[in-house]
Structures are given as C-alpha cells and as structure tokens.
Amino acid sequence: MSKKIQVSFSDNQIRLLERLKGEFGETDADVVRSVVLAWLAEKSFISTVIKQRIFRETEHSQNDDNTS
Image (cartoon, rainbow, N blue to C red):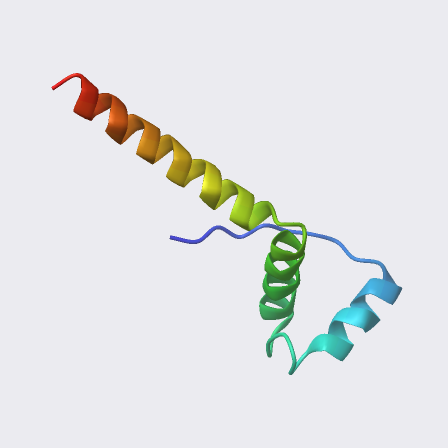
C-alpha cells in the first residue's frame, strides 16, 4: 500500500533535489523518499523505533510465558 503526500519546495530546494537525481533516485518522488529515509536513519529514528518494537514484542512474549 502507498499513499501520496503533496509537499512544496522552494526554488533553491528544487535545485538541490535536481542535483541528487541519479544518486538518490531517478524521479523527484524517488529522491524525496530517499532523502527522508536517509534523514530518519541518520537521526537514529528508524533504529530507535525498531528497538522499541522489539522490546515491546519481547516483553509481551515474556508476559504470555509467565501467565501460562
């Protein structure tokens, strides 16, 4: 499943995105998607969310084991 999200960029931002084509993707959408995911990874948001999810799943699993 995918969802389209409309965003607006300044002229300078558009020029920067144009320079990233080929390195981060071939289309504007590819470049924006790649930049967003790279930023999230750089800020450790992705790994933090995954770690929290694993912790919750592990905790939930341990609680199920203790009630058996």
